Length: 470
Image (tube, rainbow, N blue to C red):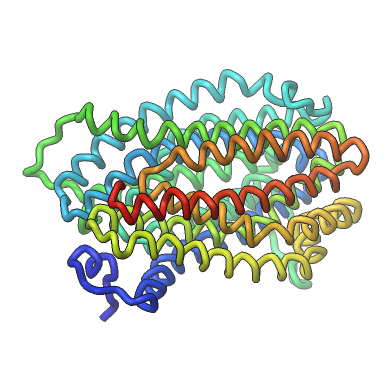
């Protein structure tokens, strides 16, 4: 019988360091596997688009930072409720957690449709604002418009998945992430390419296809988001042991719960706006460097994510552990768990960075057949490999702070790091060193950001945890 570490924590049972580490690993593994599978599927996805040519790859790369912005806002809205739910579960207030689920789902659905309207309204002008060349503007517009129309499903996906994770059920959320990635690849294969004969490992077979190109890529991803989001919602409402609907519990919309959610979500949203607007500015710096540079930049970001996504898996586990430990008033575990999750994340991503440095040419060649993109992308990955340990520190520490509901720290640190360091340094170095200079700036900024997070973890999180101020 598998141990339920979170239940033992809520019951006040003692935890040694080895037991804490076992809890972190047990909760992290499903999320890490989901993130890795997601990246593998993104590789396949990007490889499909890469076969369409450099222009289509650059079209998606041009608006990718904008899609991250909208995705980040969806994540922020969900975080406002999932953090509170984790604390209520930690305090064994399951009825209160279920009430908050209902308030949260209604609120984020309204917010999702608001984002849809904004995204659709700016989709025609966005490629122009980002400085895209004329031959990639139409493709970027079509891709982003379809993305915008799918935002309510993405919002549902983030929120339902985040709430399920907050309850301690990492497996279901992780499994559905894998399912979404598989569906993405299947839908893209059917929608991107026309019907025809395919040859794989010397074997020929006929495959039907819609031949929609970049439009098919956007539709495939949107359909996968929709199927996954609806499935997670149904599981949350009808199958979750802790949070499923109880007929005897009447729902009343709670204004205080919404205010508390906004108190948590607004700093996260500001953080996402700061980060993603910096990414947009980053894209604006890269755009004049040419189509090959844009495509290499986009593919390298996808390739690098294979290294940093495990960090996000550990960060998700950290948020759940910290939130429930605070709710259970386990001050003996809160500080130790925060430190231990950060150390674990740094160890995992240090190994990932070493692998990325060695395997950079292979990683890029999978994504694009273009030799120029492969050569340039390999250079970029090897620059970034040196930043992975400190990048891990920033990712997991942010998860620790979010679990505590202390969401202002990541916002401030990202503001300082991105806008005071990365963007000015990238703009300066791009003039002389091109895209390589831009990525050197990113590497330097991530290292500084990681050190800032480590310092703030000690002087703010650990002291507050000791004093029971969360």
